[in-house]
Length: 140
Image (tube, rainbow, N blue to C red; front, side):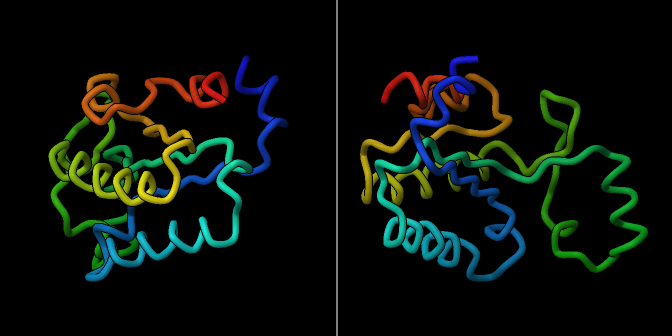
């Protein structure tokens, strides 16, 4: 509830889902350009939080995608069953990409709160980000 009560104090929440990193040759460069541009046009003090997340889906969703979009690049990368019963990209790959994004974001603002969407507590702790988004509001 803290998040909901205090969200009005900040204007913008950014949510970067790291799909581009997997499906595009220059995905990391494109994502970096996206958050760099964000910091050019948005004052970091107006950002309530930045959420980083990776694509995840149920097995049924993947089967539907395979039937409807058999050539989709989203289906080419390895996916494993996650702790939440959904398919996701391997932990080591997600962690590496999150770290690269965090490093870039932190080089532009050390104060903006970043959290990982739908990751386990251990991943959050390893990357030094809050385990729950409420902490983003509470730290301001």
